[in-house]
Every structure is written in structure tokens, then in C-alpha cells.
Amino acid sequence: VIWEVPKLETGGYVNNQREKYQFGFNGVIGPESKQDEVFERVASRSVLGALEGFNGTVFAYGQTGSGKTFTISGGHDRYVDRGIIPRAISRLYSEISKRHDATYSVQITYVEIYNDQGYDLLDPDHETTALEDLPKVQLLEDDEGNVTMRNVSTHRADNEEEALNLLFLGDTNKAITETPMNQASSRSHCIFTMQVERRQQGSDTVRRAKVNLVDLAGSERVHKMGLDGQTLMEAKHINLSLHALEQVVVALQEKAQGTGRSHIPYRNSTMTMMLKDSLGGNCRTVMIATASPRGDHLLEGISTCRFAQRIAMVTNEAVVNEEVDPALIIKRLRIENRELRDELRILRGDNDDGREELTESETERLRVQVADYCKPPAANEEPTLELGASMLKIKAALRIFREIVLQGGGVVVGKGAAAGEAGEDGAWHPEELRLEIKRLSLVVKQRDDEIDVLVSMLRKGESGEKGARKATEMLRESRSRGLDDGDGDDGPAGSKAPVLSAGSLRAPAAEDDAFAQIFAYEPVSKREPDVPFPASPGGIAAL
Image (cartoon, rainbow, N blue to C red; front, side, top):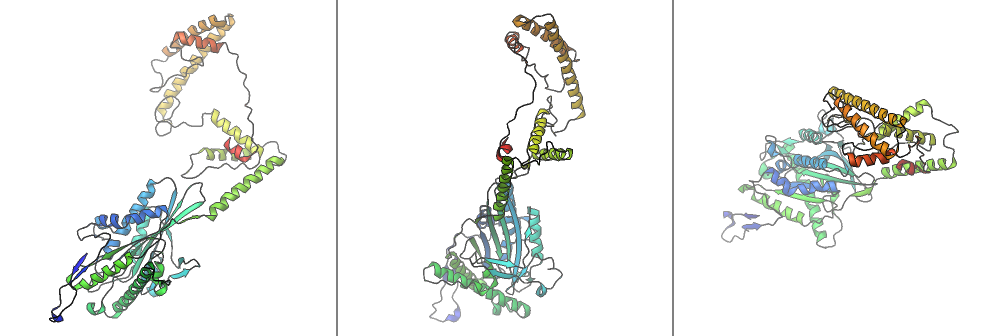
């Protein structure tokens, strides 16, 4: 960026006034650029980094009327004029909806610093109570230097609409005054914070990060703007807080240059305390320097560029904010403790108090638990079936599971209208039921004919391979007769009658041999399955 300042005529013949100022930055965004370009170049990386556990801050600095609020919050007339904050909200929730590897939660706070006092813009009493009567934000610092705020409400936002509603609510409560430079000049510093929490299923660690989007009030030259009264008092506090910000930046710059300076004056103002992490701490910080192209504000623009270059000298150390969640560890240890107690009770044999069977009410409750266990689980939730150390409950649960398996697992949800399947919406329709009943009736009639053929053959004393081949021919004739009795309707579209245990009867040569082999086998007696019960709750859950 190059500034050219014409020499003043009042400087006389020997005038050593500097006429050209040149500054280098990471990028320059001209007045013809749109809001979407500003967001992608400036804030996109910081916003998406919060999903990975990195803190991020974006703030605008410059003279009053140079476009800070328009850049951060945007215009209200057109949708394309949305600023960084609404675009960051939209991008954040859009990215969360695409990620299914973990669960995310977003909490929002909105604070303004007016006359060096912090206020909660989302306080429900903000609209009905005078500003001086509202509770002031108190800043607390722990032994590790972390700053926390008291008297600030935190609001959970589950979707983009809720987050935007909170943003609009806070914007209506901001302090705005008309000045000679701006008809709607911000008279306070505003910090919009989104706290993102990421949890992965089965992991004890949780990642927490925050994104600070800061709209600083503009610096003002009192003698040039002719301020008085309340606006003069506001301008004094704004300039003092910006001066404290510059002191912090200068101290950080000197520390980075190795001058041996250790103390950083964060406590000089409320704003620098709130942005302590963003300035020289664990954060990805981006600054937008806004400058007015008007000729009578050249000195203010040069001052803004100087401050921006000092900010570029500050070194931050951004790391992933990952920690072990004590609540998850306690929950896991409690489950492990309960399983160990249940295992001890199983080994000791004192798990059912001498009872031989469950009551009807206990069995019914167990059926409900098994049914809930078999339902599709919610996102990132592991279904559990609490049976304790009771062998009666374990055996009853296995019997219930066996009944579910023998019954086909309940209603089968399919996409076609094939036999044994429901419609596309997972429910049986009347027409499908009618066709299914007709098909099953045909199958029953066919089975009766097949039984009659086999019984007739046995009575005649025919056995062996010759008898099996004869039975095959009789069964084929019976099946063709059964299909002819169906009035040309074979059931639902695409359905087929269930095949025999001997296989399909459409290929005589191969299937005759297969039928002869199966027919010669001895029948297996029907008995209850012998299920070995494991000795540990983990083995029972796996079974």
C-alpha cells in the first residue's frame, strides 16, 4: 500500500516533509471486492480451524467511518452484503452437517465494551433496563493466565437459524450514535464468540475451541470532528482502549525481537484482557486494517497501516485444545465397576436370590428392553442392554432374541414389492397383503399335494433311488398342477414360490440326483438348541 502526501505550502522553501509512505501486507482487498471474497481470504481458515480444536480471532481496526462494521457485520439491505459474522455462522454449521465422525455443539456469547465496561448484549433485561443498571462483566484470571468472564450468558445454538437470531438480538442492543463521520457509528467494541466442542464416540478426549469475531470502534480525532458532551466522553474511552491495545502490541513486538521484555500490559483495559489469547497467545489471529481513501484522512490511514505492521510482528502459538473429559472417564469407570461387580456375583452364584424364574412383569419389562435394544441407535450412541448378573434375565433375554430370529426379526423393510417384503415406506399396503395371502394360499395347497405324493409313495413301499426319482416326477406334476390352479396370478410382481428342500424342479437330470440324495437322509429330531453361557458380562454381550 502506497500513500502519497502532498507537501504543505506553509512549510516554506526548505521543506523536508515526507511525501511517500509504503507498507507491505499479506494481501490487499480493494474497494471493488465483494463480501464473499473478503470472507474467503480473511476468515475462512480461522472459522474452519475451530472444528479441529484451534482458537481463531478476526478483528477489524481503523478510523471511524472506514468500513469496519460493514466488513464484520455486513449491510442490512442486501443478502450479498452479509459480513464476516453471518458468513462464519453459515460456513460453520454447513461444515458440521457434512462431518459424521464426531458430535459437535456450538455455544454463543456476545459482549460489548462501552466506556471500558463490559456488558452482555444477549441479556434478556437489556431492552427494558438502563445500561448503567445492567450487571457489568467481570474478568477473572486463574493461575495459568486463562481469563474467564462472569455475568455473561452462554446460549447453545443447534442450527444456523438459532445462531443468527442471537446475532440479530445482540446487534439491536449495541450502542450506536450519529457522528459527523458516520450516521450510525459504533460507540463500543463488540466481541461475538462461538465456542465449538467436539466429541468422538468411544473417546475420553474432547476438543474445545472458540472463534472471536471482533468489531472495534473507530479511532477519532476530537479536534477534527468537533465532538462534545456524551459523544466526547465515548470518544475518550474508545481512544484510550485503542491506545492500550497498541501498548500491548508494541510490548509483544519487542518481546518477539528479543529485547528481554517480559511484562505485557493486558490489564490496562477490558478489551485487551478479553483478547489476551488472541494477542500473543494460543490463537490464529487475523487483522483487517480498514482505511478511508479520502484526502483529508491520509494521516489516519497511515497510522492504521503502521499499527497493522506492528500486529504482523506479533507471534502466536496455536495448538489443538484437546483435553480429557473427567465426566466421560467417570462414566466409563462406573460402567466398568458395575460389570466387574456383576461378574463377581456370577462367579459366586448369588445372583438370583434362589429364584427359579422371572415374574410376568419382569419378563414383560425385559421384552421392552430387548425391543429398544434392537431399534436403530441414534447418531454416535451405543445401545446397551442392562441385564446385571442375573442368569434368569440373561437366559430370558436369549429366549426373546431367539423368538425374534425365528419370527423373521419383525417387519422386514424393503424397496420392492417382492414376496415377504413390505412397500417402499416400510408398511404393508392392502393390495400387497391381498396378493401375499393369495400367494401363500397357493404355496400351502402345493405343499399339501407334495405331502400326499410322499405319503402315497411310502405306503407302496417304494424307496431308494428309484422311488426318489418317481417321487420327483410326481412332485413336478403336482407343482405344475398347483401353478395352473392360480388363475394366472402368481402373487405380487416379481415374486416366486419358495423352493423345496430338494432344490428347484426345473432341471430334471441334476435335480433328480439332488432330491434322491436329500431324500435318503434320516430326519433330524427337533430339540432346543444347547447354548453355552459365557462366564463374563462382556462375553454375554458379545453373544
